[in-house]
Amino acid sequence: MHDFHPPITDAGLYWVVPVPAGALQWSDGGRSATIEMQDVAVIDQPKWPARKAPATPARMSFKMIFEATNQAVTYDDKAKLSRDLSDGGTRGGAVNGI
Image 1: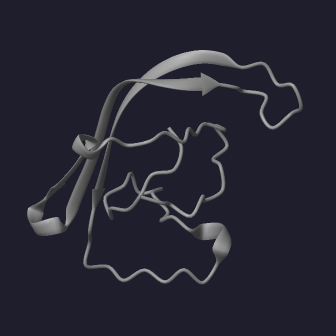
Image 2 (image 1 turned 45 degrees about the vertical axis):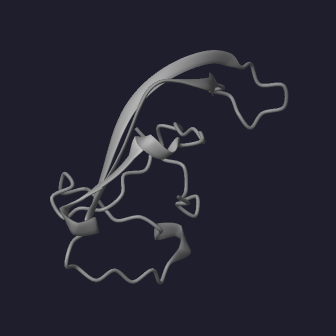
């Protein structure tokens, strides 16, 4: 799965990890996908991309749910490769950051 690397949120949080086959589950006739992983090894590096930024081994657990909508989406602005979830996510779409 590739998200075309949208801009990093103001929180500055993101990790790239391999997703084992069993962690991805499809439901609702392919209209919903859930990725759930527990105790995943990551590197916490809050000063990245600074040269020689301190790195601390860490672990995290997460669950992401992606749900299709009947709303058409046009990506005409590369800086907006994800949907605006300012309504609390009631329109569906991907969440970037934590």
